[in-house]
Amino acid sequence: MAIGMVEVEGVAGIIVAADAACKSAEVELLGWDSIGGFTTVFFSGSISDVAAALRSGEEAARQVSKKVSAAALNQPEPACFNYVTVPVNKELQATPGALGLLETQGYGLQVLANDRMVKAAQVEVANVLTVHNRVVCSLILGEVGAVKEALAVGRELAAASSRFLCSAFIAQPMPQVLQAFGRR
Image (tube, rainbow, N blue to C red; front, side, top):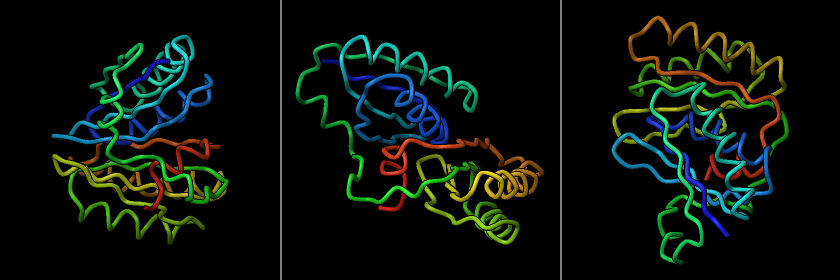
């Protein structure tokens, strides 16, 4: 048994990493944690599955975030599970569809972008995650075309600001990803 961890600066990178990891190997998404502007996603499985998931998760995270690290704990001590402070909420119903992520520094720009995105296309803001270092990441859900359209509007608005960090699109996110990062 092993635990895999992917850490990024911000939060969008771990969402993309979690989805890629869960799609590439038989791993269980455990949840995530954030400290000082960095966030870490945790998953568990066999040593070989965690290794495969780490490769996919790290590669996906690098498409979104410049600062990425990944590590595996083989045969972890039970106390290592205590680092997962935001566990997957298995009771949360995962809405099928696409997932868009828009990440900025500061809340005001994010509120404006969310307003424009929901007016531009039929999407819902599934969650707004705030982590240290003023990083704010909105998760929007809807049909593939609607999420692409809304995300383009949000990205255009945010990219005009020096506070834009990144955006990402996941066509069919894994249900456990939505359970980990959706509304609590």
